[in-house]
Length: 235
Image 1: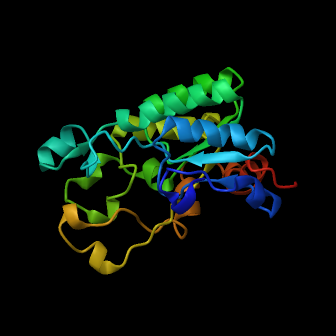
Image 2: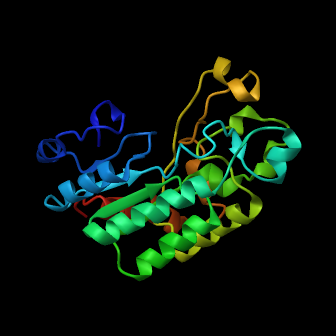
Image 3: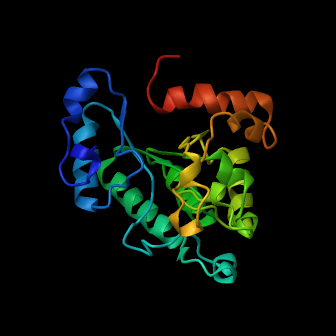
């Protein structure tokens, strides 16, 4: 979306779209500026393009390592509150409402986020979303051993959020699954929790996790058919 993915200046998305690009994001970076995102959404209306956004307001608890809550307090680790995600989703929904453009939220991790997205969908806004397999499988109670393998962004949330994601997967509020496959080398994980890098392997276990929660047919749809519809591939 922006040059060098630094959130400051838009790229030539139209030219990229003409060369075959079908969606735009700043990778693991979120678009922090509402003005920049507004321009990007307006820019893509003419070509029916889609913005992909990881909702994370980095001005809120930027030093947070895990989900803010009872577990973060017990472990003595700085927390990242759910509101950092939910505020950005609420903001971006308003920008979509204003522009009538399309956005896809990826890495959605909280119950409130799901509620906001479900409401926006019921209003007919052009919004879709995806969750990761690890947000569906784990919650912050699994972090009590300081397992750096579970250090990811957005952070693993609490059990209520995890169960809300599972329900949203089954009722269709979550449209598809994104692996967020960000493998790290051993040195970036076998270290103190605060020094460990965010990310985990996701591709190899993606299907195994999903098939425990939804039917095989629905699993195949969410990994193949629905993403093609969201991003405008031919059937």
